[in-house]
Image 1 (cartoon, rainbow, N blue to C red):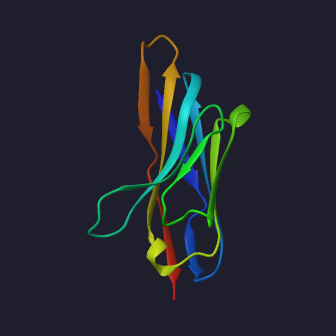
Image 2: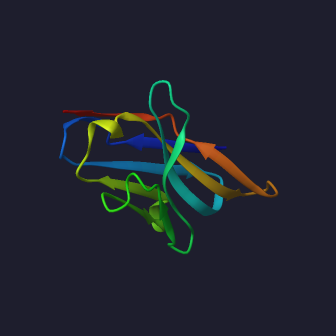
Length: 121
């Protein structure tokens, strides 16, 4: 099995910064993509940022230039540095990884438990 542990959420004033972390552990051979999604009340879950195994990144238009996704392969960890936060960034943020597992064919998709980010105006 694969386990994801997220940390770093919290309450911050508009204009402030937060850094989210997500560490994956378990029977992992390799990790393909790692990403962050968010879901605000009444909204669907949406992609925030994603990073491939080769380091290529993609961001939602709403966070481009303010958020930075990175990964530390030796620790199976992905980070999301969030700067210039706005009230509309308030949501539960979920980590997602696509992995190749030991002894199990194919790729597999896992989600973290979510971490609350609240930005006050």
